[in-house]
Image (tube, rainbow over all chains, first blue to last red; front, side, top):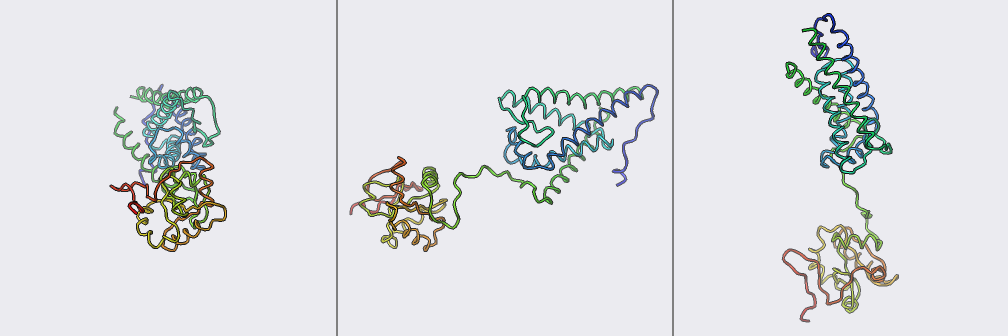
Length: 160
Length: 178
């Protein structure tokens, strides 16, 4: 349990690294809150979310329910990790991969001509906007963890 | 790249913890999802206790090979025309012929008996014999021959012969050579 309580130690702060560090923290916080918010409706309505996962038509049937069960909790845990700073490197990496995967899934379905309800922040299948809107929005969301990576890297470089 | 081992370890931890949380909570909640995805239900929802069946349901089941039709009318009527694939089994021949037909009923979702006319009792009589012999999912298509023809569903003529294909068997000829 010692490890669970131990949030990763910050290196001694050097002159000039504070703005990048603050920006990285702010971006992680933003992504964390977004993921926590995105997970809530999906956790509350698993059946609706499962039908959205099915509508993407990217997974074999055997994986539909396991993914629909796991994904919202994965988002929630990533959000909590980013918010608290616990396991933040791994959480930021996985959040970037997750948002990238969502974005690619939307692009693939756009080119397949399948107009899916995004299911990004709600499990209500009725949510329907043009696919290009979803793709554009998710591209912007993907820049948040990427920017957090870059800000964190610069902060560490200045501390070194 | 110096963070790579740490990122990998933390990522595995998050993946494992989220999976444990997700499947644990799903198992505990009353509205949890079953792990296996259930394919779309059939349009035909049969009453497990048997009874009558509509011509629409009967057609769907018979045309997709999921049911067997048993013609309860006379041999002459059967030979003049019957539901495509139907076997001839009038109630009075039940004792003599059921054992031949029994293997052809195995694995089917429904066994559908039919006669002709609103008040013809032969379909129900045959259904009773079948249930008495332990056959499950027996349904009566009331006025079946007339309804089947009215919908222009496939029919055939000919002697009493099972046209259900079985392993290496073309069908059972009941009256050949008689």
